Amino acid sequence: MSYEYVKINPQELIFTQKNFLQSQLDLLEATKSVRIYQKLRREEFMLKIALKSKLDQIKQSINLLNQVLPKAEEPEKKHKIKLTGETKKDLSLEQEIDLIRQKLNQINNG
Image (tube, rainbow, N blue to C red; front, side, top):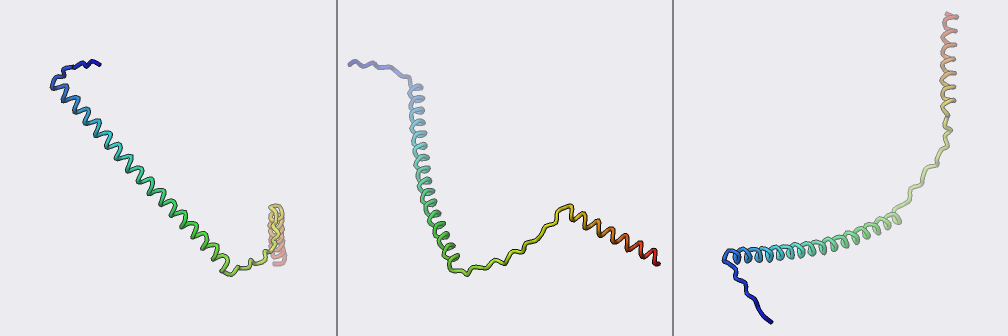
């Protein structure tokens, strides 16, 4: 195996060292960010589990309350006959006719 050597001037050496150190710094910062992200995801997962268990407890409490509390009786529903639009119009027309007849009677008698 043979080796070849290349001469690097001092400016190139400094430039290369700076780039190498900057790359190392970037990689370390990325690793730090990934670790922080993983920690936050674990915390989120634990909080979701805790929330789910609390919701299950609340659901059980509500079911227990529904069983313990007295049940209210619903009042009987009255069946109302709904008048259609035509019948309402007919009633109002009949009422108007009655009013006009009353006025005519008052004029004739008065």
